[in-house]
Length: 81
Image (tube, rainbow, N blue to C red; front, side):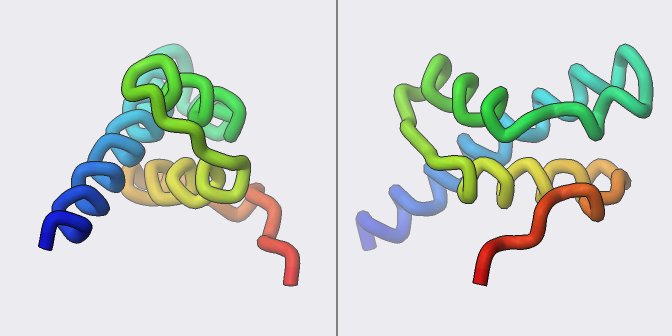
């Protein structure tokens, strides 16, 4: 039960990080929203919440944030098989 709550909290925090970056970039220009990088997601997650995430996890959250705000995530690299 506690693990489930921790997982939900982690997910909510990482989505907030990615969504904030996309929102802030889109204020400048709608084209800038697609220029947010996985490194920015990882750095802000560490700065706000002391959470270390890898590029794959950062890419997942960034793609989810882009899609949830109506942008395409087609330019994101496909995961390695």
